[in-house]
Length: 326
Image (cartoon, rainbow, N blue to C red):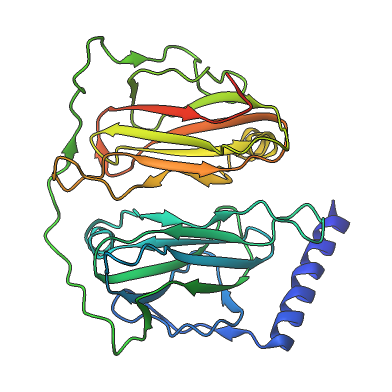
């Protein structure tokens, strides 16, 4: 045990030395009103630290090319990168709650065949002009400094420095949101006992509204049979009442095992909001994840209660794709 600990510490030291030799940037203090200047170089980040970047986007209906962000991290999966709009920044400043419109998730590329994906990526079509923010932080369970770099691509956008970023003023804290039961012909399903409480008690996906109480995790399981001829990606659509009241992530068997052993929630994908608000109430209609699964086996879906919502919330999700078995 001691030898493994020493070896791990030596690996971190060697990694830091190698990256420093390559030219690592030591980030200065930053925030929504003082974003860092992006360099494209490796940047050091410590556990508990948030590092902020900002970019200006000018919407053009004739441009349908998405904004793409690729994140590289050392050690592997040590850094989380999210994209936020100004409303989400104000929520963070007022209440300390973290919401985002997208997060970088693993792509299915491992060119050197070391069992680790080459990078993480987020791609999204922004439909409104304004200032958007990129926030980097270490992943849960990371206890040592990590290193990351990212690349942003897209039309009609420009990265901002502190002097260029518009000031974000904190607003009065809103009243707590209370969930209301969604209109439905049947009462929402409520899990009982150990149902859905862990990977071992994972439920089969159900096409109905489900009640989720504060502090609960709901686990679902499905199997996937890989076939190189499959062309239709897996897709999950999450609907919640109130809007944003639940989050949905996807895990493989190894990540589920990590949760069972350490209580650490890691995932390879999460549902993020689509830019659709048909009733113009300011809340996106649903969140979605879409991706190509490249390995047969058991996978898990975890639905979690949002921290900024009081009382039970209600959700349902739809899942489609080739090779899926429930």
